[in-house]
Amino acid sequence: MPAALPIVPFTRPVRGEVTLPGSKSITNRALLLAALCDRPVTVTNALFSEDTEIMAAALNALGLAVAADPGVRAMVVHGRGGALPARSADLSVGNAGTAARFLTALCAAAPEGVYRLDGVPQMRKRPMRELIDALRNLGADIRCPGEEGCFPLEIHARGLLGGSVAIDAGESSQLLSALLMVAPLARAPVAVRSRGRIVSQPFVRMTWELMRGFGIAEEALRHGPAGEFLVAPARYARAGGILEVEVDATAAGYFAALPVVVGGASALGIRGLVTDERALQGDFEFIRLLAAHGLLGPGAGGPDAGPLRAGGRRDGFAADFSAISDTFLTLAAIAPLLRGPTRIAGIGHTRRQETDRVAGMAGELRRLGQEVAEEPDALTITPRPLPAEAEIETHRDHRFAMSFAILGCHDRRGDGRPWLRIRDPGCAAKTFPEFFAVLERVRQNSLAPS
Image (cartoon, rainbow, N blue to C red; front, side):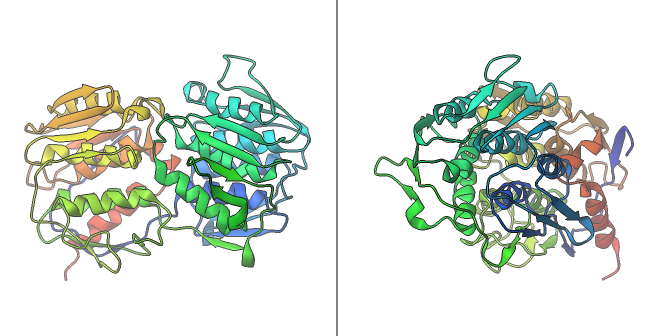
């Protein structure tokens, strides 16, 4: 892709239907859980992206064969019930948070072996200490050759003993999810108490439900009287040997915002979208939030709602995004098109993700002439006229690239000429390699005669 990609605006209302990839969060959890089974599991509608390919490559390096077929979006994982055939391995996690946390837990829970894990410089800054300490308290031997509590790690596997641990998931729910998924492998029951608030709590519920779907019985996976997680020793197994991954909810959020940006009689269907109580992903709440504030038409995000239509209101609003923080960038990016301020709170923990997302978003919006008040845990965006031409820096963060690309679909000049360029658009490959091609197909379809 070019160093800077011009986004061609929509000149007609959005219409048609779009096919989106499977969820990254579910795909990487499913790969780990499948690796903990002792029979092959096929993961269908799997996401093929940098993050999931890092996870699959690491499992292969550990001797757990993963046969991937991008053509049919499927991965077959040959698990060994928690054992790792490779007694020694060097694993690269890049900047993939799910892979980093899940693989750390997997290696620590293995019966034996020596495993070294490292990532890119930014990964060495991302939160790991709480997971490392919790695993150590369960008997794991985890060593930090560099800064204590951070990557790189060297794990001398000897299994987990069990017992009671506390973990602070205030910076990332992935820390808690990683611990829970390997807890059934411990020799004795594990009680996990959460200290403080759990950010992105729907992802913990997703983990819990997937563990149940991989055969952990209700009596082995319970909530205690004080709200702690109680996990008894158990074996993983997937009935039928197949798990189908949901459409990625965060990706759906970008395309849900598209009718808002383009306006008019815009209506876009998202194939396979399930947003009712059956859905595992909390980020579908973003679509319901847009509908609740009138930016999308009535019923958007509900069961059998049909296409997502542009709503009749364009007012900014205030909301707490602590449970759905991956979607906050999408709302922030389109806030310049709304009337009045938009306040996005509950996002302080995103300062330690792929980049400092709060500061980065504030800076890019100011680059677009917007008035932005930045707080430790929130942003307030007051719309100002957009420039006739601008270029967005993505900070090597996929969500900046995709969120601002949706803003670029607004016909700022009124003549269909691009006004917004996205630097380093290829960073979208982290979770959605085909994003820009899919967006362009939707635009072309909207131009076609009825």
